[in-house]
Image (cartoon, rainbow, N blue to C red; front, side, top):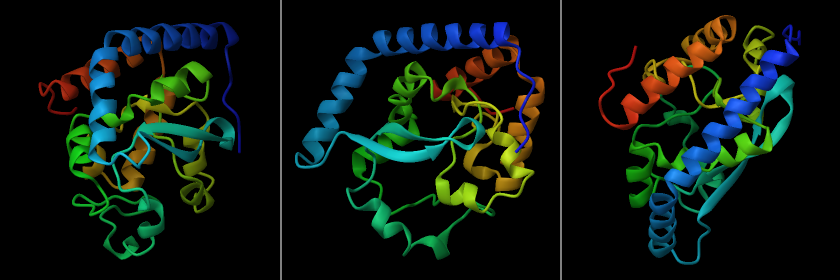
Length: 208
């Protein structure tokens, strides 16, 4: 897989902004996140609050992604029985009415609150605040060389795909948007995507 020409000074700026944004977001949202953690625990006291899963990041390197648990505990084992109901074409699995999602999970997914622990991945350096969606290992195993180009930058908590239709888009459309982002990638473009993400989270956005 080819590598992107890296300007180290610019990358340091991206990293600095990632750390600042992630820390501010975690601090300001701490009361809501604490309430959410309690709600998840009360919904199933024996189940963990957080969900950890292997994802593929920059240059094909694997890392553990963190999310608030929004599915039943054995969701991964049940996935193979639902593959024939996949609603997204290509190397990605999505179901609008996924039976594995819990009641509290449907609420936090609708508001994308389940994604907030990924800010810990940002602080660890595995992800950026803005970037392509982090794929599963089995998805990447089926990638073409063209698809793998989306791994030339760190994956993000949000990105151009997420604010352009998300689950309504096909896999090929997601790849095209990710590559468009990589080509246009800049601090200004990241700021625009963050503003669109905020509008989506607050119910004021209508996509792009």
